[in-house]
Amino acid sequence: MTMTRRTVIGGALTMGAMTALPHARARAAGNKQLTIGVCSDFSGTYSDVGGKTSVACVHQAIEDWGAAAKGYDIKVIQGDHQNKPDIGAGLARQWFDNGVDMLIDVPNSAVGLAIAAVAGEKNKTYINTNSATSLLTGKKCNASTIHWSYDTYMLSHSTGGAMVAQGGKSWFFITANYAFGQLLRDQTSAVIKAAGGKVVGDVDYPFPQTTDFSSFLLQAQSSGAQVLGLANAGKDTVNSIKQAHQFGITQSGMKIAGLLIYLNDIHGIGLEIAQGLVLTESFYWNMNDRTRAFTKRVLPKTPNNYPSMAQAGCYSGTTHFLKAVDAMGVDQAGNGPAVVAQMKKMPTDDDAFGQCSIREDGRFMCASYLFRVKKPGESAIPWDYYDLLHKTSAEDTFAPLATEGCPLVKA
Image (cartoon, rainbow, N blue to C red):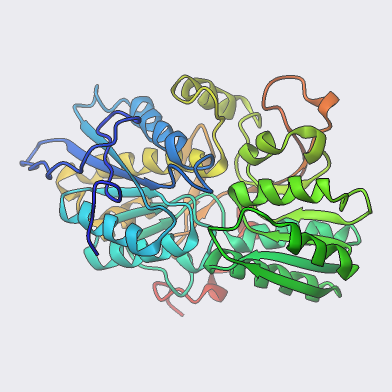
């Protein structure tokens, strides 16, 4: 693949800068230099839940950790994978070959899996906070990769399970036709069937080029299903829900299950349309004093966008990476398996997620929260969109270790 200025984008310590990737900095013994690469979607479907706010959260982690006072010189670069696995993998390969110590973010499961393979090959630290596929800690796990924030198992069992419990026994799925959408649909279908429900229809749509969901919504409406399951994310989910409202689907009694909805999506949809939606997240800015404090600090860097759970994961993951490198010595920062092993040994603690841990398979073990979207009159301050319905412990949020199929896990 030919890497061009369009496909390889760097921004050294400046989120808006788009310049070519610099040559690797030589790290002499005792020199506390690190390079972190934020690989994300800066212009497409997932730009609101990744992109510039993810970069801002990485910078905030560096600042809050006190890198400068500790004598560290940390460079942050950024690149747009354009939701294409080959571009993402090529970008990761070039970054790792040029001295990037850790790569983070990566919305889009197909891209996320491609980069995990490169990280495993190059033995470089990879923290994925923004791909949903549970394969990252399952059959595709490796010693260089950690999966933060959420996954398809969490979403299917929390949101899908809640909808079934509310009486939604028959479902019709609209599915993004790549790894994430298909796995989310399949895992949610298993939850539905286990609870005595059924799937009456499913339509896959071309991703990422689809913006008009009207024909799919009409199929769902005519199916007679009680629940419309949206196995998509980002702007696709926003467009699907807005168009469903235009067609009067919710007014006719059909419920919508947005299986991956971020706070940023609710902001884009608006409370008038989104009110009453049930969704699952592992982070909400208005959850407690620590989440509010983190959000207050990072907002000046991204004033028009509050952090999503994936973007908060960039803050949390970067913080823990820096703690691990500092504990083991910066000269080991380029050894991905060693860094990840150190991260697994240490409990995590930060303002976004609180005290958590990392499991043997690389799964970041955090609680999940089932929320209901507020009515317009119930929102007291900007971006105050959720009421908490239920908290699920980390142990019950993610798939049991023995069922994941991760080759790192001893039988």
